[in-house]
Each structure stands twice: as C-alpha cells, then as structure tokens.
Length: 95
Image 1 (cartoon, rainbow, N blue to C red):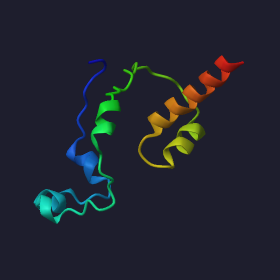
Image 2 (image 1 turned 90 degrees about the vertical axis):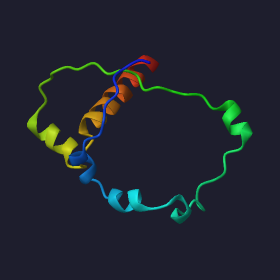
Image 3 (image 1 turned 60 degrees about the vertical axis):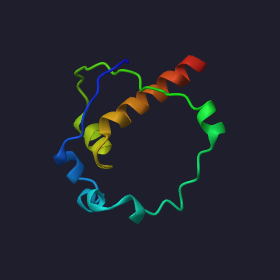
C-alpha cells in the first residue's frame, strides 16, 4: 500500500455536524438504509480498489489574502490548493 494511513482525531470529528455519539448507540435495525441502492454481484465483479496517491510534504510561502480566501470555505484548504494546482497542471499538459 502506498502512502500513509492517517487517523481523524476526536477533536477534528467534533468540528463536523455528525452526531457520532448518537450513531454509536444505534442498533443496525434502527438505521434507515432506504436511500442507499442495493449493490448486486455485478457491481462487486467490476469494483476495484483505488488508493489515493501519496502526497509530498513541503513548505511554501503563499500571500496572506490567498490563504484567507482558501480557508474561508472551512477545513480542507490544503486539499483545495492541491486541486487548483492539479487543474492548472492538467490544463498545461493539454496545450
């Protein structure tokens, strides 16, 4: 397996809107699966495991206004930076 395995901390989970305490206390029979489609044998025959590409750790200097703009949509600003850079890279490769 490529890359590193990371765990979400309890503090990080607490920032979301999911009520994990309530979910942990539920029995399987209490969970509503009605909106989840059934996955038949044909799905599992075609299914394949896709692992995320490993990331390189680096330090960059970014304008303060750019960082604030990226952070204003909440957690995940580093993922957004990566998506922006990947989009630019792919556009350059097409030309």
